[in-house]
Amino acid sequence: MNNRRTFLKKAAATIGLAGLVSHSLKAQQPMKPLSNILIHHVYFWLKSPEDKEAREQFERALKKLVTIDEIRDYHIGVPASTEERDVVDHSYSYSLMVIFKNKQDQDIYQKHPTHLEFVEQNEHLWGRVKVYDSVDINN
Image (cartoon, rainbow, N blue to C red; front, side, top):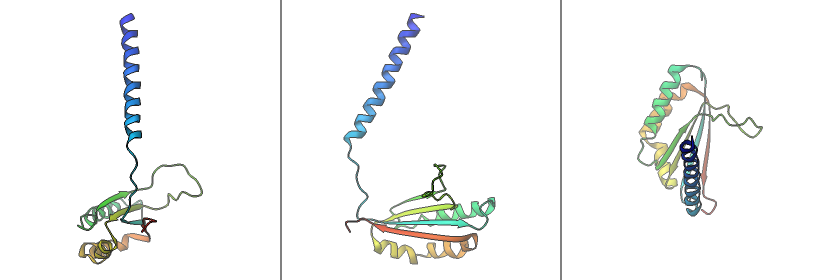
């Protein structure tokens, strides 16, 4: 019994120390702002969000869309199960956030055949689309 208590105390101390070390390492690394980029965030409201086939088609199309070379980084998402508040909108079906190095790359993306094909082959699936483009406040 004494060995078990000793083991549990050591294990708890080790876990606590590991958490403290990882926290202090994170604290040492300053956060870097995302700067000198263009963020293109698109929200889609599907006409039939409960239609499994439509969702699968749309997800495949989004995954193909983000293969465009000018896209530096991307995120494809669905509403998070965060707290319901007046300022939080969970009503959309999908979000797409793509990051470009600059406006020129975003301009290329807008006219890219893969982007045009995405719109042509999938616009019948959505009832509403909202786009938010932003750049760093120091640009």
